[in-house]
Length: 461
Ligand SMILES: Cc1cc2nc3c(=O)[nH]c(=O)nc-3n(C[C@H](O)[C@H](O)[C@H](O)COP(=O)(O)OP(=O)(O)OC[C@H]3O[C@@H](n4cnc5c(N)ncnc54)[C@H](O)[C@@H]3O)c2cc1C
Image (cartoon, rainbow, N blue to C red):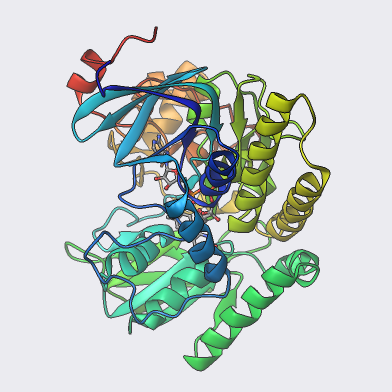
């Protein structure tokens, strides 16, 4: 058989903490495991390793949780498994994963699948968000930690959720002046996160480490503030920032202008569920977990019994949750093969991590008022150049479902397939609360791949 088709007992998508934890355990038990990841090296988003030969994040201090990451990567890289990097999975059905690798169209055939493809940044459009120099908070992190790129001299970091802290500390570590670090949630709302941090030793250590870093650099988070707009001639030069109310609505009379040359705006993360939906999994809207998440049973099994899921795809929760749920996937699969249930202590550990994460993230659930930052002429879909006004007109004429808005103005139909605009598009077009948003519609290819890859896809048999 040609090397375009690989066979394995278990196929794992994603070599982040969730995928690595599952794959390492399954391989140690003697199963043949193939891991597909589009990144050049293992680690996922949080433990991203610089490309071979680059000395990217040298000198930038790492939080204590990264010790766990190094250990996971160490075990993963020594495990007897097949790890294919630069492999983009673009279609799937139970037992089959189609992927593009080094320009070739390949297929993985397997008995079971573990999905751990993570999440992506939640963007909330505001005037000037498409100017060069304005990127997501996650992207800033990736530039600094993953590629050693110093993105500017004077940075603004704005948005909501725990990802702001690693972004700010990465920039400070790289010698960038962080002019302002703005968290849209109020200090009082954020206090709701406290039990999830105080009750979990690892998160407590992590929080103390971040506070010390901020203190060392004389930086601080401003609670209840956000970016209203960015301006500049050809690229960002100024940001208008101001206070927001408890729902995220801009407060009049609070705006002020600061000079910056780079802006990281990240309003949390959105679970990357497309692959799961394509494989027959069900999803549910959970705002504290970032939006639509896959529904899994206690053993991380989806509605399609041969497909398991771990980490952010089941709801944003962080690396500890992902690793613990990856371990559950492995234990459940090994249990199935032996005719027993997953190990109770592994289930207990994952439940405890998830509970702590849910408690913490409830304080950072998306604030609906932030959808009012965009003006009528603000682009809401940057792939198809659709403004807020055009999206609103489409909703008035064609109906306020996500599908009707897309059909009416092409928003969400470009290369990103609504990954960027989708989470806020419907709310912006209709003025409705984001909680009533429709489930994402999944189209193949799930990721942008070459037309030849689709044309030459190996047969499923
Ligand atoms: C840009 C970004 C930066 C982040 N930085 C931090 C941080 O500094 N600190 C922190 O605590 N949390 C961070 N997070 C959150 C972090 O993602 C999670 O806490 C943790 O990494 C989740 O683990 P996971 O295994 O679920 O997914 P991830 O670690 O995200 O791993 C998913 C992997 O799946 C791969 N993948 C996805 N889709 C496909 C596909 N179709 N085909 C092939 N491969 C695919 C990706 O390349 C990735 O390597 C970040 C998130 C993002 C989006």
